[in-house]
Amino acid sequence: HACNMKCGYCFASQGDFGMQPALMSLEVGKQSFDFLIANSSGVKNLEVDFFGGEPLLNFKVVKELVLYGRRLEEETGKHFNYTLTTNALLLDQPIIDFIKAHDIAIILSLDGRPETNDRHRILNDGSGSYELVLPRIRQMVAHNPVSYYIRGTFSRHNLDFVNDLRHIVDLGFDCLSLEPAIGADNGYTLQNEDLPRVLQEYEKLTNTLADYDRSGQDIHFFHYNLDLQKGPCLAKRHSGCGAGVDYLAITPEGDIYPCHQFIGKKGFYMGNVAGGSLDCNVRTRFQANHLENKEQCKRCWVRNFCGGGCHANNYFNNGDIAAPAEISCTLHKKRIEGAIYRNLQKKEP
Image (cartoon, rainbow, N blue to C red; front, side, top):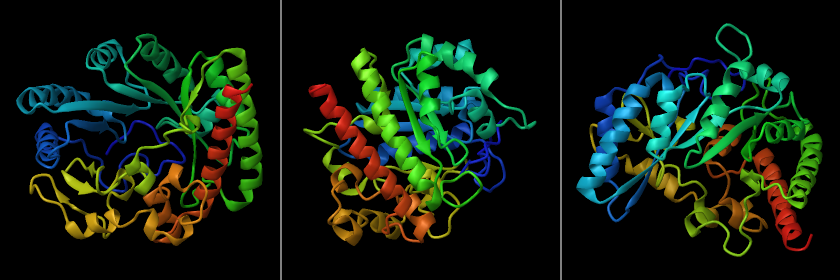
């Protein structure tokens, strides 16, 4: 819960989630791993995402926890898959070497063109971050990590976000996503009046990706990676990301929440890793929040590619994790439409 930047659209109050800045101790980190082992009976492959704020501010603990996880693998027969999400400011060669050596998937934040990135992604002194982070991102990707994504955000200040996608591709990156800034109005988040322009831009995005396909460029755009034959796994079809059930967020103090966006929110505290148990009432609420219990989803044509939307977006827009957020629904339908078109174009150009 600390960050070395102050991005304008940040849902986490510039990294501290509206609380006192804090870094997780090694002790709490180990308790979190032990908690995961104890509560994953019958599951062999476990996922750990180092997130923030900025996790590289606490790289010493990240490193020790990865090594601790390797020891737990030997003891339990389970396997940890790691992801680290970073703004890239602190990436250096020793960190890059560790990420590569331990097969840590890396998500690197960059919003596109310099003017876009530097309006959104601001250093603590108010200056832009583009020139600082780009060489570090290039250095990381050049070392061929097990997996990487350039993760951008578009806001109402860059509704021409296809130009940002093109810029990222022109930089030589082929795995990327551009996520909309949605939620409470903070001057950056999309509003209803922005939707016609955004939907038009998604049409442009679909055609741009199809052009890349025809030219032989294999661009992996997160929301357009769609398997029409098999689709998402059954669990994701049923209830989306699994927040509060298969996915939990742990604070630096060891407090447990359904996901990082619910941290500190009244009614969503689920316990502490030191205690070893979860609040069954919160867990039950999220288990019940599936497609069959959402009236708005029952006749929706994208329901099985969506899972009912993001629980947090639903809550922050409508005060109810079971009430889909209208803007999110509209955008997701458009993305799935574009993904289907792209998929069919690949088969019959």
